[in-house]
Image 1 (tube, rainbow, N blue to C red):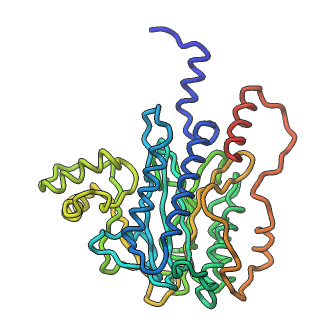
Image 2 (image 1 turned 180 degrees about the vertical axis):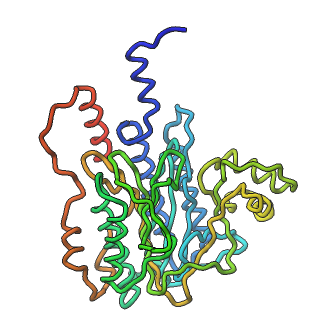
Image 3 (image 1 turned 60 degrees about the vertical axis):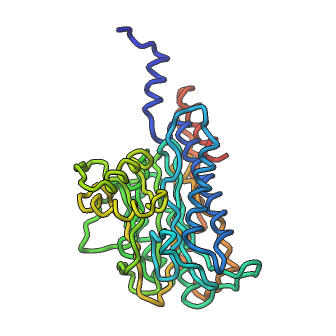
Length: 394
């Protein structure tokens, strides 16, 4: 046994730091975010009338796998899909990533929600985006009516959430702001949609932000702190906001790491072995397995014995318009950085609804913190924080 030197002890402590105070962690979140945004842009180019949804989802997942395969080659770190590409059409809310044999095609005018995510060494970046499907090579007409209202409302609410999530603020402050925007635009927050804290290899942390105030459900109130990361999820509907399942097959699952059971069926054992190897802690789709039959058969026993947690395909009532935006927020000491998501083109949405004065005031504020004069930090502490912020803002 040999006592650790001060330098070794410092290095060992740094290796254990898994939040944004570690500049290497910031770099991994930023890299995951860049790949997530590239994958989203690639998927958007494929979303035109006549395209097969299963093929587009496969395209998105392949983009993530290829991009992550090109980086950190010299280091043995886990990287890849943090959430499989899903494309949910019209009143379908989420988690639609169909098997090839059960897929459908997009139609011009469909209002679709795209959802996907990437991780580098367990540091996760996710994104959600809403768009209208157009004809290939033809400009898509601007949205009008209730569909325009709900898309603009979801965009404004996500902007307000970005400005509201900051160290010292409470999760309930964000909920109230989102509910206020929904009321201003005459739309409804979707029940069950929750924003979660992201941690290393954890896509749904215990700290969460509900979309609306439910008197029957007690929400644990907490204060945001610097160096935390959140997946901020906003979904609005022109209907009653109550999700329901239909006949669509559930294809997205996540390994319940705390559960174990000796499976009886060979297909179940084969599937679980593959899951433990490729997707030990983050969501995946059974369409990613070569043998579709094994995927369909294997999940039944795995779900029955709670080895896999299902993400069912959810719907609103037929004819309802639904919009969804999701982004990854890094709570840096310099302010809250929105690292995923694409610029919103307001010209594509024509609505006569406008935010209230209170909401407009929030929108006009900066997400960056004002610098305050204080006592000087130690050289090492100051350099480390400066490096992390520089990485984040690059």
